[in-house]
Structure formats: structure tokens, C-alpha cells
Amino acid sequence: MTNKIRIDDLAEPRLTPAQEAALAYGEAQLVDLSVDAVLAAAVQASGLDDFGPDDFRERLALWLSEMNEDDERTGLGRMSMFGDCVRHAVNRLRIHDLLKRHPEIHDVPIERPVVVVGLPRSGTTHLVNLIAADKRFRSMPLWESREPVPDQRETVPPGGVDPRWDRCNKAWEAARSALPLLASMHPMDPDHVHEELALELPDFSSYHIEWAARCPGWRDYYLSHDQTPHYAYLRTVLQILQWRRPRERWVLKSPQHLEQLGPLMTTFPDATVVVTHRDPVSVIQSTATMMTYSARLHYGHTRPDWYVEYWADRIRRLLDSAVRDRDLLPVDRTVDVRFHEFMADEMGTVERIYDAAGLELTPEARAQVVAYRDDHPRGRDGQIVYDLRADFAVDPQEVRAPFRSYIERFGVREEVR
Image (cartoon, rainbow, N blue to C red; front, side, top):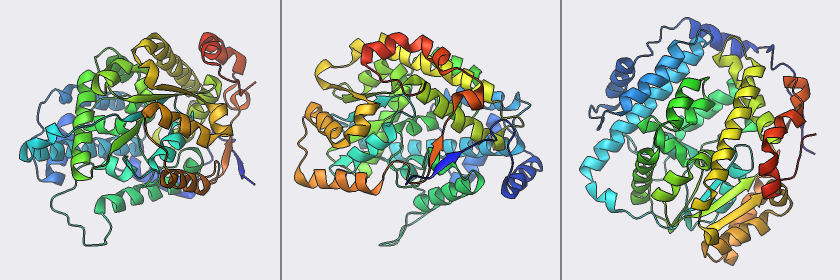
């Protein structure tokens, strides 16, 4: 029986001793959230100094300025942002260095990927991990997404553990210790298949930072700029990963693609696109709960009302863009997956996707997918009980109202009443 978990302290968190200690430590640190400080730390950490084209500095500066201008950001939150930006900058240095030494990587083909596109919290993670269980596919585990190019100064002994995996695992264990319920909402263990969106971070773009900070200024900047160059950067990093460990085809996924179907199809014109659909109210209450829960470490006030308003608007923007650009998707290579149908028949959903992708679901591949499904039942780390009314003082029907046409067009089943 699944363990039901109710979070009843979103607005006024009851901090654990470990959380209080972490926050106190963060407040005692001086963090210079400037472009120069981030890049200097990256140069020192990597031993490299060529970042390539410097247009990224403007985007990095905007990320950092939103943190500097937010009086509610905790010292720990500032430390977290600084550390993430340094890691992205180190990755940029290593990527640029590798491409200079191996320009043939630019010729590596990325052909006929299967791309899962859908709202956050709509089953995309489970679906992409199911497909990735078929070993013919190339996918990107979280540890590889965090450091796509290894540090040349490190070696992996035969049969040994990649230092990148070890660092990722330590980060995950630290996150679980600091936020114990995170695994029940969004597991981030090193081997789970992650979003290729992470490969845009060394170029300091994507909507990813919206999951880490309150940054409406970045949202507006990102939405007002053509993302095609950053998708091209993403593809180049995929070529690096393919060059290092090739497979027949890639399986990818990111909710961001909903509002970037043009750049997505320009970058991967022969892709099979899987579009997941779920009641937007379920998505919003799940997202707002997760973000508010995490905010207890990064902000002085968790502000549940801010998160539900922000993500209700953000989900609307994602869906409006997806509906607007729907005609950009190839009719014969697009599969719509409704959440309730996926939950009722996971293997049937996988079969439909393979048919559209022109790929045989061989007995061996089926066995691999089934084994993953059986080993990863829904709610195995506990199941959070979400309550939009109690936690956010919001009527689900009011939240759903802007999405009526989307729900009717795609036959989405209402889950929250």
C-alpha cells in the first residue's frame, strides 16, 4: 500500500534541525553573485579559460541580478545559485575545449529522435524512463547531464565509478537530507533519465532557472528571444554525448518544448513527437506544492500564493504556445498521450509510440521496458497528497477556467474537483 504524505506546513514551515543548520551556515557566507566572480571560479575549477562566444554573459548577468535584487533570497539560496552557475560555466569551458580538439564532433548525426513533450508533472519523466529502458535508445542520465564532458584530469579505473556519478549521487543525497520529501515528488537519483534541457544551461538559457528561483524578469527575457540558437547548442552537446557513447536513436523529453515547437522541429526535423496531456489543475497544484516546499531553504518566506499564481500563468503560457504551434508537428509522427490512458495501459502507450517512430518493439526490448515498469511502481517513495483548496485557498474550477478549450480539444480528463 502506498504511503500517503500530507505536507501541512507549506505557508509556515516547521524546519528540521538540519534545515536550520543549513540556513544558518548560508547566512554566515559572503557570496559574490557577479559574472566576474562566477567565471573566475569556473576558470580556477577547470584549469581552462576559453568560454567561446561571450554573448552568454548578458544572460548570466540577468540570472544573477534577479538573485541580487531579491531581498527574500536566503544565504543558502545565494550559495546554491552561485554553485550552479559555476558548474554551468565549467561545463561550457569543457565543451568548448573538446570541440576545439575534436571538430569532427560537429558531423556526428542525431537522427530520428523520439521526443516527449508535455506539461511538467504529467508523466513525462516516467514515460521517457520507460522508453529509455530499451537499450537500443541513447538517453541521458542525470549524472551525465550535470557534467556532460568529463574532467580530463580525472581517470576512471576499469570497473570503477565515474567521478561525475559520485558527485551527482552526493548532491542527491544532500538534497534528500535537506528536503526529505523531495524524492516523493520528483526523484533525482543519478541514473534516472533527465531532460536534455540541462544541456542549454552552459549557454545560460532555457526556462530551467524558473524552477530554481523567483525570476519573472528572466521569464520575460527568455520568452522574448528566439531560442533556436540555444537549441542548436543543445544539439551540439548531444553530438558530444553520441560521439562518446553511441546508440541507434535518442529519446529526449522536456516540458519547455511545448512553447518552443518551432526551435524543436528546426533542430530535430525528423523527430517523432510524443505529446502528453493532463488536467492542468493537477499539474498546477503539484508544481506549486513542490516549489513552495523547496522554498523553505531558499527564501525567507515561502509565499504559497506566489507559486500558485506564477505557475497557473506559466502553464497557461506553455499550453497556449503548444496549441498555437500544433501545426508545426508532423501528423504521422505525433502521438498524443492522455495521462489517464497512460496510467491505465503503460505498455499500450509504449506500443503506440513505437509504431509512430517506425521501431519494432522486439521481445528483448519489451522485456526491458516491462522490467523497468515493474521495478518503478508509482508512489514507491510515498505519494504526496495535494490539496489546492487547503494549501493555497484556491478553487480548482477557477484555476481550470482558462484551460477549457484545451481540455475539450484533447479530451483531457478532469482530476481535481
